[in-house]
Length: 346
Image (tube, rainbow, N blue to C red; front, side, top):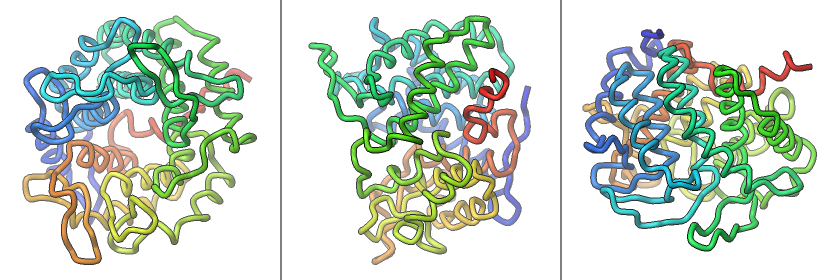
């Protein structure tokens, strides 16, 4: 069982990272849901990211309450609603990426705790979610982004960020299946086809948007590594990175955000560029609140925080980035190690 708490010399102490975990606990609803902020919406992807940060910071019971929320609120078809507010569903749609991410969280928590009972308990939830998501894969390897839960109609667009995240989720799902001796070759084929689409047929995806996530996510999700990943990051670095302040969320706006900065740090660490990753994490400490939480972003043109909220998932992203670069928890390589199991299969 992993007990080490992340710390980055001169940037964040272990006590500060633990305080960030406690701040996330303070936003958790009695149901176990982890909303964007108190009273705000819960979506199944950010909920899992926040649960992962709780696992890293030692709040095991609270993390498992979050996973139990996911288990209890999964619909019969394996999906979750896109948006829930205080227990009321406000968007019944399906986002394939949102549904797949449960596999990342479950594998992450298992790596930290070594709890086989937890893995067994969550396996039906993971299996149902990934089987649902597989139905969204197109013949070209890319995944449709979502669909209508009532009519079961699918929306054909394949988005870069969502697909990169699904690539990561499939990796974790395959690892879970192998760990409980339930290997699934269909999942392996889906993972391989999606990775091939990123590396050889990038045109099958919608064009990159103005958001930074469409820039770095193919690296974060493990579809691109090595020289290809380094070249991708270098291509738009100057468009998005604001030295000393963080990463722009949108390329043409003077607005840096903590989550995107932390995710880029995770991507850089996965490429072996850990020193630059640490610099990025250091650059957003201006978003840290005394209670350990993080404000979502800063409009650096006028020095105002916007939106005026301390988001659960921003705090979580900082924790996960700190864990990766400090090699603290047993799950610190969950972004770095995507696809490493494939070498053993060759």
